[in-house]
Length: 437
Image (cartoon, rainbow, N blue to C red; front, side, top):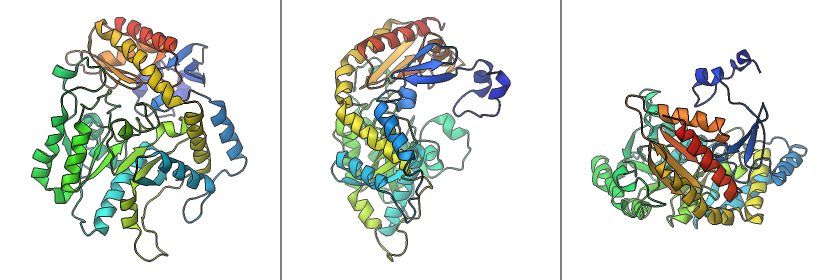
C-alpha cells in the first residue's frame, strides 16, 4: 500500500501522522500470531486489545459466525427478538456472581459503562432519590470513551481533551503506591485502607444521599495494570453497603477468564451491583458488550404501564444475531477447552518471566496478576510517554505486539499461549527495552 492510501482512515487512540509515515499493517492472524503484509510473524502480546483469549481465528467461533449469517443477519431488539440474544443472556447470568442475573446487551465496553450509569440514575429516580447524580470513579481508571465513561474515568488526557462538558464526578486515588509496590508479584499485601477515602473524604464532602454509584475496575488495565491491594475491594463493598451506594465493577478487560476465574469479582470474592463486560466475550470477533445487573435493580425499574418501555435506552445492534452467536460459541470454547484452567496453569510461569525484566535498563516497576502485566520504564524528563512509545515500536520490529500507556509496556497474552511463546514475548520485550535509551 502506498502512504497516500492510508489518509482517509482517522485511526483511534493512535498518533496518526507518525503511524502513516511508517505503518505497522497486519494482513492475517492465526492462534497467537499476526502476519504482516511483508510476511513477518508478530506475537500478539495483547490478545488483540485484551480480547482474543482463545487465539485468532478459532475454528468453532468462525463456524458459528458463518452459520449464523446464513440464517439471520439482523433482528432488532426493539419490541422484537431472536432466541440467540435470550440464550446468551441466560448463559451469562448462569456464570455471573449470585444475584446478578439480568443482562442488558450493548456493543462495546464504552456503551456498557454509559448504560450502567444510566441504569443507576434511573434506579434512584424510581426510588424517589433523583438527587443522586454524582458518580465516584478512580484516578487512572478507564471506562471507555462515552461521555459517562470519560466523566467517571480518571485518565487525565482523555478528560482534558474534551473540556468541561462532563458529568458530576469525584475520584478516589489510584491504588498504585510505587514506594511500596514497585516489584510486587500479584496483589500488594498492604493498601486496603486506600478505600477509606470513599467514606472519609468523598462521602463526607458530598453526602451519601447524593451519590449514584461508585465505578471501578477490579484491575486497572488500560493505565498499565494496577492491581488492587488485598482487602481493598472488600472494603469498598463494605463502605458502599454501609451508605447504600451502588458498586459497579468494570470488567471489560478482566471478564471471562483473564484473572483465573470467569470474573475478577469472583477471583477477589467481592460481588458488585453491576458488572460491565465486553472484549473477551466474543474473542474479539464481533462487537458485543453488556451490563450484568443485580435482580433488585432490574425489578425496581419494572414499573409503569405495561405498554410503555421501562427503560428509555438501547442501541440498534443490541443483541445482534451475529454477535450473540459469536459469544455463545466463545462461552462453549472457554468451557470445552478449559481456557480458565489454562490461565491458572500458565500464570506462575508468566509471572516469573515478566519479573525477569526487573534488571532490564530503565525498568522501575513490574505489576502483574493472572495473564496481565505492566512493565514500567522511567519517564524521560519533560517527555513522559516518549520512552514507552519508542519501546513499543522497537518491540514490533522484534516480532511482538505490545501497548504502551504512558511509559508502561503491557503484556496480556491469549489464554492459549504456551510457555515457550511467553518466553519469546518476554525476550522480544527485553530486546526492545535495551534498544530504547
